[in-house]
Image (tube, rainbow, N blue to C red):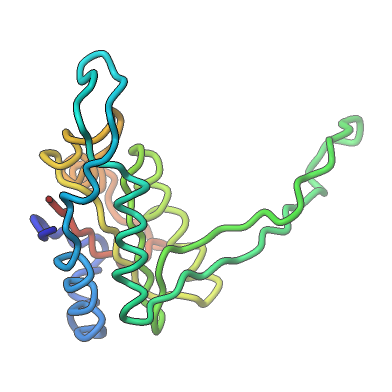
Length: 189
């Protein structure tokens, strides 16, 4: 795979380059070491692509896990203790599922990495919520979000979001005082 684009959200690229140059080299190696052709395993059932072989996001994610593990990156999982005091007195909730958690794909020395081949909402959630949560909990201080560029996303199931759309929205959204610095990396096969 190759890096096709980079966008700096809230100074993320500059911060990664300055504070984490070795980690950035590991991230670049993790990306470029993956042979995307082995991930083209999903036979499409969609009307517009029926029978075509597409890139499989779960297979891509497995390749990233193997690649990052070689450099000793680890996932970080935090348990969620949901508050119950906000229910109205006359509401009787069903018992909440035990073991709820949030997880960041890869963390090393306070640099968090998320790889996202899903719907647009997940990309936004990662940068605008999850990275802020993990920063507030002391697990990271900077983030990297790895997403496909449009040309790559077009060879996956419909609905997979892409770098160009994500960058446009982040530019129009602007930066908030609670946002974590994040380097957005657009990748192609």
